[in-house]
Amino acid sequence: MFQESLTHRVREAYLAAYSVLAKAFGETTEELYKNLNEITEDDDGESVAMATDVIHYEEIRWLEQREALAAMAIALLASLNKSFLDAQKRMLKKTHPANKTYRGDHLFRQIEEYDDRFKIDLTTVEGFNTVREIELARHCCLHNEGSPTKDYETQTARRLLDANGIINLTPEQLDLLIGELSQFGKSLTALMSQVWKNTNQNSKAGTNVAT
Image (cartoon, rainbow, N blue to C red):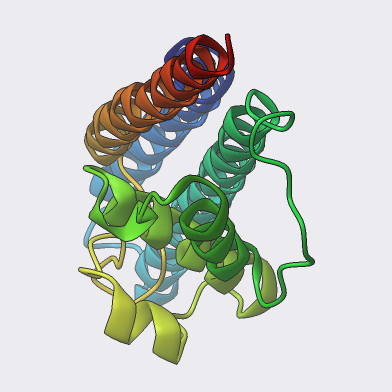
């Protein structure tokens, strides 16, 4: 379910918007360059400067649109990560209830709670570094105008910074992230299943001893 949501709710939405905007940018700039090339030597420099400025404006606009799409996709990924982590905990709420309030930011709370309730160190689960990078990149996009925070700089591989040092994303990078998050989902699900099996076996063993 988690893996399917990553593809259908994030990838497809991102690629649909990306393809529309990329097509519009390509068609617009093609026409603008055509007009620029048609400016003759008889035309004054002002015409060339004006045409060049319009092209530059469209290029900046396309960059801003990609950054906005990246922020959207990253926010959706972070939301799905949180939902997945919360759903896994609910599966064992009867056998491993939360006996205290966990404080701190979202990801820190998840790490502490999983360790406390299930004896699972999330930081060692395959793909967790991607979960962390997504969460910190989301914070950069929503609260720091896309510029990397100190936490993002020091706690991640900084894979999502573009040439301008702003959080951004390409379709290829999104596919890579989704693959890594899918692996995280599979790995954590297997660990939680083992926790459930161990609990069930211990319960049966206790019942047999009692009888």
